[in-house]
Image 1 (cartoon, rainbow, N blue to C red):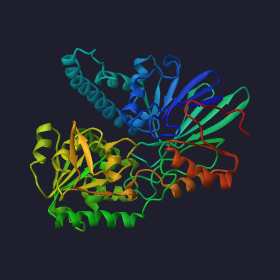
Image 2: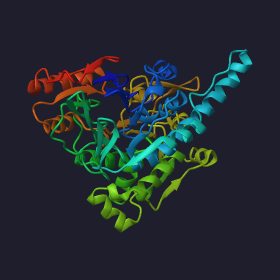
Image 3: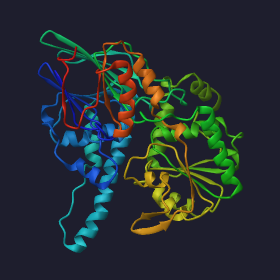
Image 4: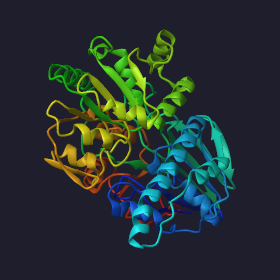
Length: 466
């Protein structure tokens, strides 16, 4: 009974953990490595296991750093079921297809350059068809339902409160008379966040895999966060500029639309034109609207009063490239919510090209920015950036709205960990070393040696834990 750490160990992307129990092999997540080019190049490396020998996958949620290599897994020989929440399945259907489309498009552009230079052509990481094929392996589960998935292994999904359909995974395993319960946090949500419930508290476990993305920092209070957002809107209006918001298509976009609707007049949103410039985010918002049964009480009330809690009277959906390009002709009065969230791809890069050098532009950073990304450069105060080989001066004001994070902060992570009994061993994953190590110090003050920080590729004997 072992677990191997094959991604998101000392880093925040590539979530993938291999569990071997009773002759079966189970994957927790199968995510993309994201960030700098050398990091993303790891996605083309062979898996550290034989995919055809994997009996099942349990997926915590649909973000690509957790789900994005599933089509590759299928291409490499996997033929088992993928268990996840039904809302996660619906989001994966659009997110993986979109990732396949981007893979095909990017390789097509690259191959044009390579052909002119006489270089060998590249194949896409995976295609839209690959993404559609893997959806046939999905098996949808509801929260709180106990399900036998493999001999000796049962699973139950609990609400993680991170994005729609995100799950904390409870696994009960038995082998040779040894029984262990493993809990995988997935990505834990930020308590009090809009739309979704707070992360479910769990009391019993032998081993807990817990994320540590923000293990070294505290978020601003929600009141301060809303006041900060309101201040940015007022400041931008007074300077007659535009607001660019690089936002993750799933989760952050829906939260922004929701809170803007809830504060429509108080924040002066009614005096702007709001553009949702991302076909993926538009589709994801439609999925969010369908799965209202997992909303919290306030969001359900907003749905009753406003219809869709994401609708705004001045919201424009930009589905086509032509509609997107038209936005760049607007000099002021536009709030543009565009993918991608770390400014590494998507339409936000085109908007930055047209506006990052304008002093009236405001950039709102509303999500985690991994090392090596353009978004991280902006957060760290870069004076110039490069887009498509062109160096550009950064005259725009950048605002980092950290309190809007969909991840629990240090206090939230500790509070969730405190819910477990004293016998639980905690394994810190999904965090850069500084964040992980800061959380380790605080947890060790209470749990002593029952706190582990595995290295990439390391193996933990679950049966040996006492």
